[in-house]
Image (cartoon, rainbow, N blue to C red; front, top):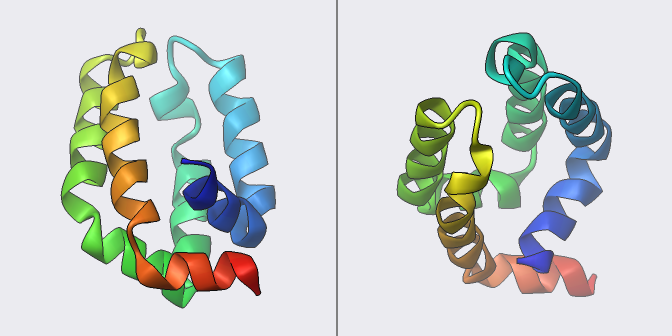
Length: 102
């Protein structure tokens, strides 16, 4: 789990921090209030080849995680298994280890 977060944090740190602050400040309406910041993370991630590969290869567990967030807007803690599945997938990407060791 840490490896995937480290890659995302390394390349999209500012976007992730802004989004995290927004979500924390708007627990009941974060999905609506933080939408533009989420798009900023997507733009950042799309710019990096390794993140693009992870998003492509792990699209299914990521989509399941997003669906869970939409269905449990006020109780995002219910989506922990979905995020764990996405992170397990991301950590299995061969380029991820090479990037972290660089």
